Image (cartoon, rainbow, N blue to C red; front, side, top):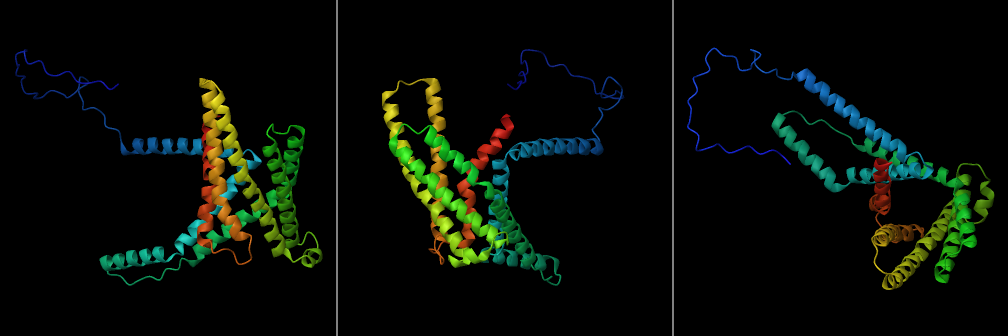
Length: 307
């Protein structure tokens, strides 16, 4: 709590002090030292270095796992893709034109031609690089999928519906990953394109891979529905307890996060399931992709401050 000043005592007689002529302002005989601009700048620099050190340390913790690295690549790709389309949009170009006109009117100088195409192209190139890097990381994706299926068979969920849905998700995810890996390796010349071309070509394999991924999204909606039903049944028969309520809040939060992720990916994935798409704007794909994983990245970033 901040200290408050005592109000002046109205009962005490007012005493007129003689003017402070020839007396120093401080007992030491000099005015109180004022911090120099150099020392202020040094403190600000030190504070900035400390903040940078903390941020880099948290980033290092975030990227210490393979999943954290993949999320950083994903967020970078999504945001650069969105920024590219923002800079190329008509409203942004109109705003730039107006600001340039106002600047010329104030300075009365000749207009300088500015070309933002190279910077936009670099953003799109960075987004493509992040996407390709994630393709490379997912070459090992069949191993955790196998482990997921093995763990499900060894320790199946008590609910038979969830058990069946989980096995279906494992199956379609393995199909998705196998097709994507084959198409990606063929595009890099690692495996022969003749076999791939015999079955429709690389683009067809990517489309069928995306359709298998959409199968996972489709089944995930049923998983979320079933989990909601089971949670309501469990809540109706349980006695309220502080620890149980805390665990329940964490469970509901994770359920909502999964629902947001699935809802964002569904229209995008459905659009990519068809050669000509379903009309989803490509300029919004980066934004929606970021929205799908933004909550998860936020939780990962928050966890770096606790550890």
